Structure formats: C-alpha cells, structure tokens
Length: 309
Image (cartoon, rainbow, N blue to C red; front, side, top):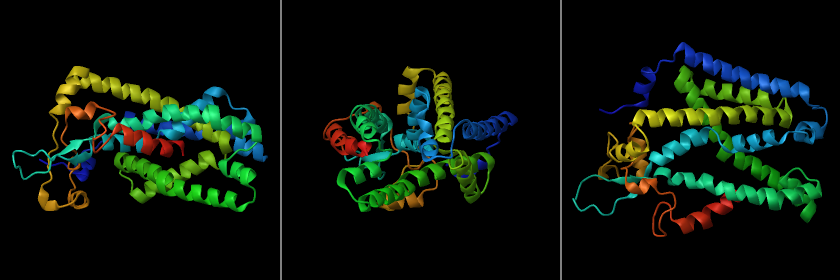
C-alpha cells in the first residue's frame, strides 16, 4: 500500500514535548542574536561586518561548520542517498520494470572532499587575504586587477548564485519542516524563516551570525549523534543495518511506460517511488572509474573545483 505525503501529514501529531523543544530552540536562537547585538559594537563597518575581529576560535570553527551544513544536507543528502542511480542494464529476466540502484553513502563524498579543501583555504588563501587587508573576494579582485567594475560584477554574480542555488534551497527545506511539523501554509513558513533569519543576522551583523551558528552547530552535532544511536538501537547494530538495508524495497517500482526520469518523477506522488533498489554498491563511497554514478576520477576532477568555489 502506497503512502503519500498527505497521509504522513494527517498522521503526524506533535506531542507537548515536541512543541516545547521547538519553541525553546527558536527562543534560544533569537536570544543568542540579541545577546551578540549588545555585546559587540555595530556602529562601525569593522564592528558590523567583521565583529571587531574579536571572535573566539571555537565560534569561528563552529560558524564554518554550521554555514556549510544545513537543512539541504539533513534533508537533501538523505534523499539523495536513497535516490535512484543509473538504470540496471543487466536485466536478464526481461522484467517490465526499471530497476535503478540506490546511490547510497557515495553522496557523502561531497562532504569529505571539503576536509581537504578547507585546509587549502586556511593555509593558502586566508594568509593572502590577511596580508592584503581585504575582507571579501570581490575586494581582493579589485585590488589585484584594478577598477571597480570587476568588484561589482563578482559581487552581483555571487549574490545571484547564492540566492538561486543556496539560500532558496535552505529556505525551502526549512519551510518544509515547519509545514510538516505545524501544518502551516508553505508560504507562511517561508515568511517565518525569512523573518527569523533577518532578525538574527541583519540586526546583529557578523557577530550575531557567528554566535547563532555556534548554537546551531552544537544542536546539529548533539542531535545527529542522538539520532544515530537511536537508529542503531532500533535496527539492531551495524550488522543488521547491512542485512536489512539490502532487503528494503520501495513500495512502488516505476515501469517503462512512464518513459524518462522526468516523467517518472512528475507522475509519482508516493514517498518511496523515487527510491532505488539497494545493492552492496550502496555502501561504497568512491567507486570504479567506469561507474556511471560516482567514478572516483570524475569526482576528484569534477567536484573539487566546485568545492573550492
């Protein structure tokens, strides 16, 4: 029996503990933002955009972590890990179904690549920025090549890219959670996320952003470990994870009558209809060079420049 998103929402009932935890979370974020507003001088450009260069090291590290890990990872990467990869071309049974393998933990390679690239930032690029006294990449490019047009162009380009590829995804993912948890209208959820973000960032500057990021990092790390331990307890350990995961099948398997993948996604409303068939390859991060989903050479040559950006 298929299960739709509406069925899940109709069966969703938050307990008093759940609502209390969410309210405390939002109050903690807003309170942290207001605390940083009064602690740091925001009347100068240095104070507003650079937090007077007085932030402790752990806040800087936590802010880097929280700025790169968000709703698009907790929701998006989990979905990508269960999503379909390439079509199984070795269909010897002449089955009318399209079997598409699960991408699995290979999606985590994108995050592991960041570990090496962040070292490049800290040991190569950051010393140059500090030596030249610049605060942003557009400012550095203007000093390096001269003129203001390149500075304005890069700033506008980065704003456009962040709005279309990052900010919009984060806002939508967060609004989906609010819509699912509180049954708010999706547009109202988007407005709530925007207002909360503006309250904690625009009013407090970089100091507010870094303090709220520190709180977010603590919550995400602690919550991630809690979910991990509860999941292992529920499934019965790592060995059972391997066994039971390979037996997990979507309740709907798409057939060839739907045509291409775009039509498949548009015609299916079942939550598991975009899931693939689990295989042992799902537990491999970097795969052979001939793998159509995650070849190790294509990953290093193709994704590393994107990560540096």
